[in-house]
Image (cartoon, rainbow, N blue to C red; front, side):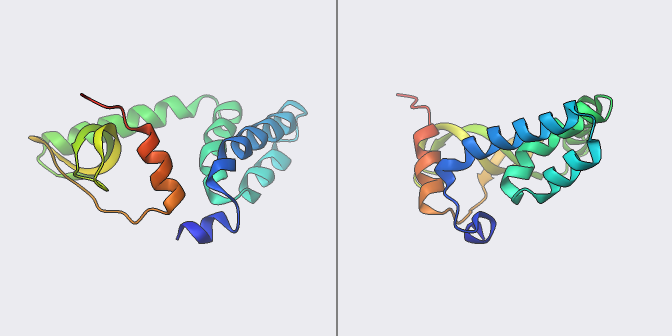
Length: 140
């Protein structure tokens, strides 16, 4: 799946692609061409669009991003209060639970009212696993 999303692009280039995408989108918004800014954001690769689109929404939709975040948090709390387990990404201390990683980092896991029960297995590309491994905060 990662190969389809990346279409020959490298994960190490993603931060620069996001910065360039945000800058181009903001230039279009500042010029008043909201339709062109939207079309530009929609034309971005999915992983870049995922990072740039919230900024487009923030700068063009009357600050709905904060309301959406609050709504998501309220929904999460409601589901947990009512006893529904959820798959979420969260920072946890790992002891080999996910790709043999040890330390604190964010991973997909099952969360319930009693806490998190297990990580959710994911196939990661080699460069994704390298960057995730580099992000782990040791706890020793």
